[in-house]
Image 1 (tube, each protein chain N blue to C red):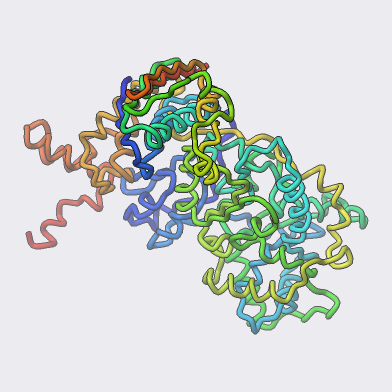
Image 2 (cartoon, each protein chain N blue to C red; image 1 turned 60 degrees about the vertical axis):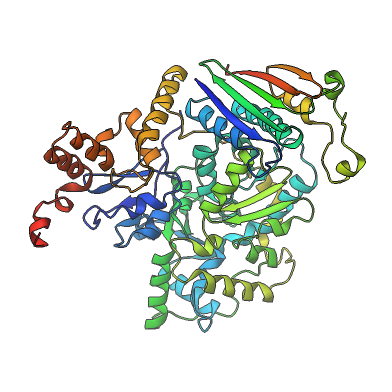
Length: 137
Length: 458
């Protein structure tokens, strides 16, 4: 089963609605609570990243019997150094943003910790594509 | 699969007028209408009692044990929540109420909140002492309707439930132990808990995460209220001696059954108290979505006004809360073991306070087989897209979505939707008589009797 959700950059009111809908589907098909939880954590983080940093993006959800594959494709500034961004605590956020409690550099590491397979590609000035897979067993 | 939930809420079909108000207010969509009467899905119902409140003809009742069983025990003990007293007007003194209870036949009367100082101590140790094994936000297990709500509706959060028994369980354990030490035979002790709600009754009859409750019987709070008031009004009791009184309780103990009673005990962290099951559902949905983070402790209670809003309380909840607060103002911050003997039993109770892991039992799962569940989910999605989204209840289900789910799980037929009926009639796929018969099956022959048209001179 395939679903596509659109996300607008800057629309914080609706941030998280895709992960909420995906959560409901996973519950309906009887995926274990632990796997529902980690999928929601990873997807929520990635979804909010689009809202916070990109201009817009599409989230394609491919639900299969034994796994879920989610592709988040955004138009945005892109990530200059993915390896660095994957390090815990690394953040491009300014001191001011950090003082507000954001940009602690936990985003991508958190997505990685909560997905079985993660692939990130990015082009500076164009956008980022995140592909994550979680297995149900 | 765990044993079925026990439900304390029952329908009286002879009184039911088939209005379906109960279906609309249910937070878990557990009720649908068939043959003119509500039918409860036992795997969804959490005994919150919203249907009981909504019913205009009192066709829902709460089961209780036969009161006569109190007299089967040599030492019948009444375990009563402090809010029981808050039901009575101020001019009726505590000692009068106690005298009436003793007159009715109880040998001892204990307030449930005797164990609150114990609960406080351990909650603080866990929350403020940084117990790393706790999943944040830690969710209080005090309200059994909430524990069941999480099991069925928010299974992702079951590991967040604080695995501690409720105060009534701890006080019951203390009563058994302390009376046995005084030489009373355990089999002679009968502990009767006075319940303000259906959920507590259900929790005693089939405890979650606990083998057997130490409570021997349950008495509905409104029933006992009437019984006590009757004794007082007729003056048939003997006023007990000055020395016989309710035990002194700390301020925290009296606040405990009110909203905020648990969070107030904690001195550090982000702790929130939310009451009303619909408010709780809204909040937990966001916690499950990860939309709300960094909360340490959640005190969640199914009733508006917490236990004072319990469906079995006899007085208006706002007045009860006011009386409870007045009583609290007169209490001291701390009481010592002379006032509350339970404080001598901390170590004994500490061993007994834990419950085992709470199992998820998702109500949303459409099939045990993932592939089949996916097919059903897809089909339900397609059906729902073609339904009017009016949520008119006329199909017997609380919403279009609920009907779609019921259709794919073979519990209902799509022709129950009156919009679908009209569409089918339009294409001669169904006769008006056939449509009428389908609605008659949902709403019963009486409500769908065609002579209504004649009665209205149409």
